[in-house]
Length: 358
Image (cartoon, rainbow, N blue to C red; front, side, top):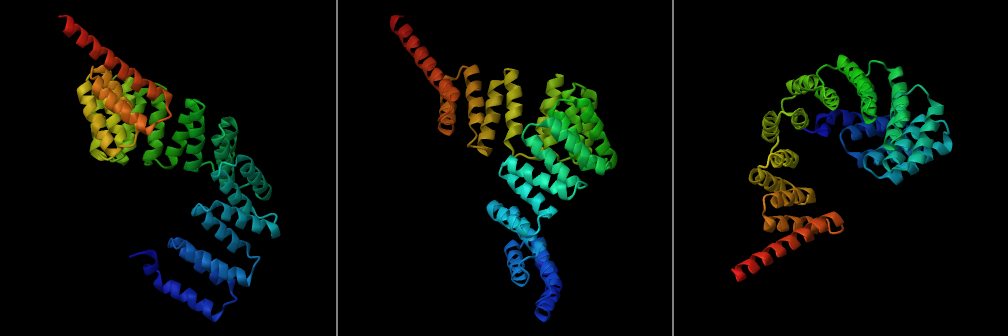
């Protein structure tokens, strides 16, 4: 039963109130929110439009409408709607904040930062705003500024696990792993059974070559979510770095068991097989990956490289040719293809010459 059906009586009640008192804007706001909760965004816009005919200056209706346009990725309509709010309410925090989010989605970083700073002038105690500013700095690779703003969000809510994790992730970007460990552990203190944060922490320990702790937290992440595909992938990569190749094979197999419809486990295990000169087995896995993701040029390139190592130039030419069709303007792929064709022709010519003079 969908949301609309489950709340049929509530919808009827609010619509009845609107029919009896069509000038009461609060009922329109309630009905619009209900439609949003039910995923009926166009209906919500319609309701907010009726409200705006009664009260053209209703900032709440405009902000809500702009937020729907943002969610629908109709960014210019969102910008126009939030800007309309600011024409009559120059200190509207929600309009500036949402306008910043919209510009950020469009990668218009200067406009986004300008909007966030205007929002900050309206309310400098909102942790979500500092988080948005931090993410914007992070997108611009300004990691010290990102850390400073993530820290401001955390100062306002010190026990918020998301804010601790955000700060930890920023430290990871700067390869400041000890600091990252500290804040991931603070996040885990609040939510000890969150597999995503446990996986983050495991990856940090792996980057530090502290494989004992890395394996501990990989196991914990999988304890709370035994079907966590990404955890198996990361654990296998970590085991490879540790030199435990056989264990890595087993973990890749577990990833494939959990989700056989993802190509990267096939590719990563195949890469590991190639490093151990098990070319035939590797090629079988690359073929399976191709079935899942037939438009990935990287898989064909991996297969081509492996065929070259195995001495199968015909197979390599076939795979490189497919990669070229997918990446027609990539010079490196073209060069591998042409070099392999040349080597094949030269080898064939030498063989024919040898046969003719024998």
